[in-house]
Length: 411
Ligand SMILES: [Zn+2]
Image (tube, rainbow, N blue to C red):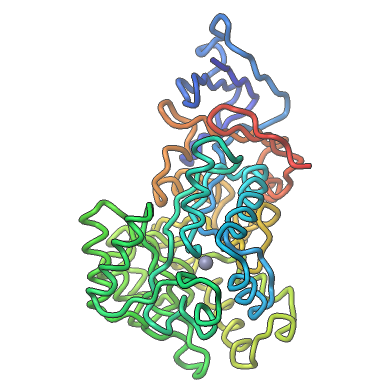
């Protein structure tokens, strides 16, 4: 048994902070949360008492790619995936998982990985063989042939075949889904629509047919799995929401009609600000981006900032997802997304909800709140994130506990 005693506690639900708080932990679960006087210190319990800290739930990043290194050049990104064997990808990802956990992220959702590598990493972490966050993994993302996750050069030249899984037609997608389930997927990732770069007036294109999206959603929901979709805007995004996709990733160009429907259906928005901002830390040449691609990125960035107040006004659940691994280094950058959510219009407390309880609900982990029965995933922040949300970007200010156990500090 352990008792955490802290001057201030934020439980992740958006409730006002609790002063003079204590958390009672037995094994890897929280047993009780309350005032120090009410919780006491049971005989034999280990006391973890800190001055000047705020206890918050372990952070959750709902959109990462542990199989990717964060390399910014688009061609190098594809080439290194094609060159690495599955074991090499998994071993490299184990280091990224450790870095992510040490940065305060005790749960993540992985949004596509070659060869089921991150499913195996998830299991190795669960078995205690490797240090890392709780992982929810989709296996391979499902894409139409030649689609967003089956772009030229993605698989044809590589040493292995399932770098991605192209599917076509409702039956094709059903088969793809069942293959991911067989491999151990926790949820299904699809690519309903993508960014289109040729015509600035129409910056998105529906990629899966309505029948394909519907087949995935119907089958997944019947099996108790959620569906996440990479999206950009237009008819594909509208269809994704209408046909039952649970989490909308990116959603750059969502118009008011789409947002109204998301609010009505309880669809979650994961805007992934950070990856859009990241593009502008480099020149187009450094990323291997064409003039049309650069124009699209600028339009997508502007649309994303415009999206937030409209989503917030409708009460749509907004969740923190960084897209780390894609152009961003694991661990070092994930928390910047939380700061950007505040820049986008959420209050610091709302941004904390987006990175804890709302994220836990979206990715289905028994964490994200400091509440009895849940995993004792706790971060002690040296300061108050409500006063200064960017403090979460500094691993040296965070003491991380996963399942009640102290995680080794970052070197
Ligand atoms: Zn992504």
